[in-house]
Length: 86
Image (cartoon, rainbow, N blue to C red):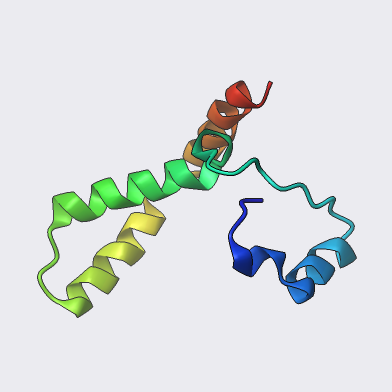
């Protein structure tokens, strides 16, 4: 998990640990280790192409951008990040 302060709140830690997951924080300033950064990049590219001009259009384009991320994309984001983990 990244080091955002909201992720270090005791309530969040407890919720994650109750699922049985092991909580491991990424080193500071390590976007290459965080697959979500690649997803955000894909969404931002989509938004730049759409060029929404209203808040409503922005919300619509954002929702469409989220749907553009396929299961294959997500897997490739994880695989890419794993290359930097070793």
